[in-house]
Image 1 (tube, helix red, strand yellow):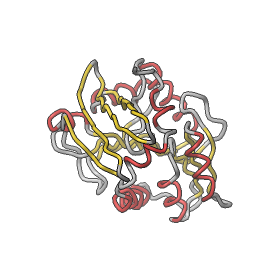
Image 2 (spheres, one colour):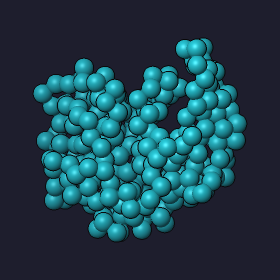
Image 3 (cartoon, one colour):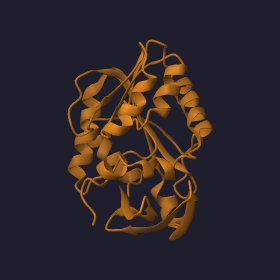
Image 4 (cartoon, helix red, strand yellow):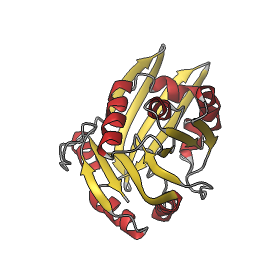
Length: 241
């Protein structure tokens, strides 16, 4: 059964991290190098990585010389990320829907970590919280899937075997959401989870950003910062102030 806060359960399970353990870190690190260079961020920059998961982007950004705070709702992920902490890298449990206590020079929302909620007002609330947490002239980096390309190329069924677990994956677009149904047998039990991300294209995101007073300065279509093409780009990457 789908619950509103599906991510609270799924992101806290070990199976989420097993399924996605082969994510491309090289690609993610290339993006971090490109975007920090493009924004010409000084080494005094304090970046909020939200949500940060187990901290893979945060750790790499910190290795580039930036002060980084990683925030995530999943307490299990934050517990694991905390082993990487140092004087200029820290992690905390943070719900994006709650106001932030600190101000940052840049906020990074990476790897399609947005659009989880049924009600647009919750998405707008998150963007407003991010806007309020930015210092004057601070940057917001938003990295999302390209919904148009997903719609044109959706793979309805897929089987992935990872760590001897067979994940049965079904995808569909329904009621304004891109849905990924994941079922598998592990540790003596059948499990099923559904990831749901709102179908957010450039027009819809532009409307959201304008509602909270963000000005979009750049739109990119991939981690090499090539121009965005609505039908072919892999990502929808927005830079806003």
